[in-house]
Length: 437
Image 1 (cartoon, rainbow, N blue to C red):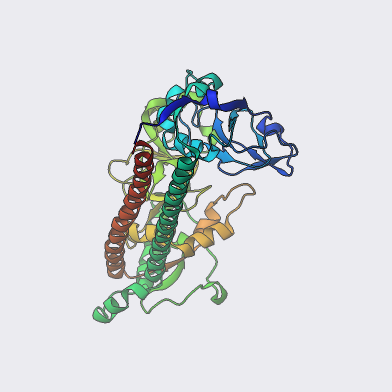
Image 2: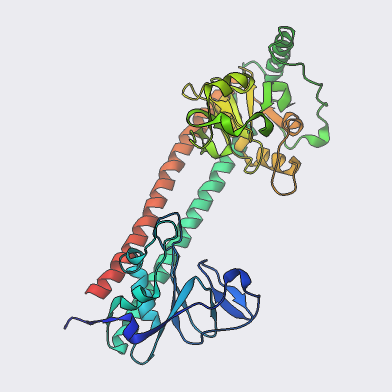
């Protein structure tokens, strides 16, 4: 088979810049192609032939060249002014869909590599006109288009299956947590261990401990919490467990410093991290060099210094963010967007975290949060949340079961992610082989 003829885009296509500023577009009947995956709309159309639509600006900006996607569009449509339309001059010689698939497969080498600029990275129309592609007979182009679309359809089907598997895993994790906090997960354990100290006795001890700490002026005196009514109880707990309010088992519950307590001069590039929701990923805490303060600020805000075993939770936005302070993070400061909690020794920190991220607790927090633009927590909401208090030894057994189960889930999730990546790489390899074969 002879080598395909390599030709320039400019010789076989019109390359025209989009004609409407995306923000100036007026919603209408015609599709408006922008850099986003979904189409917007406009009251006028500027193109009416099948075209490849290429962004002329980097997807990420900030001096980095990248293109998330290019588009294929047909019919009557408009194009944003930061993109261009590449339209074949003769549809009997070049099919726009063929050119689209070719440029999409090789966009890193053919398009991204041509982008220039320090801050605003752009791609010029003149450079696009110079790009070469293999001009195959129109019948052969049709064969390749069929192959590409079949491969894309197959890959999309796999992607949907992977997404479904990940959704099922997420639901399974929540099912395990619900069984854990309702006592269903440890039904057999209770049969084998009938003689354990009930949580009601532990609750009395916590009350005594808090009274002692108040007398010693180590914690402030808390206002009495309202008794739990029958209507409030969401589900029945097994024998030995007890419902209580979160405030009853917290020795300390405090927000981070108010914004007015921190000033521009307090922040440094290398210092003591402030722990905010952005620092918490997968229930672990990571430093963020954009939110660090100096030693002098730490001394001034010593009441917000975290100790080993404290639990930090988000007080706004994604309320599922929750993490335990380790030895490595002791001495860091609670940030303005977080709460930090010290719980009794009769409650395991991992058990508390699993309770906190359960769908039951998250529903309670979101339903009772305040704020019009985003979820916001306050101390009153947290203190009044109902907590299913389990005996200490049973908490330990629950944690062991969840940890084992979640470890299997993590392995499955890793396999799903790898399979998704492998399928995408395989599709790219098949398409490149089609062109290069």
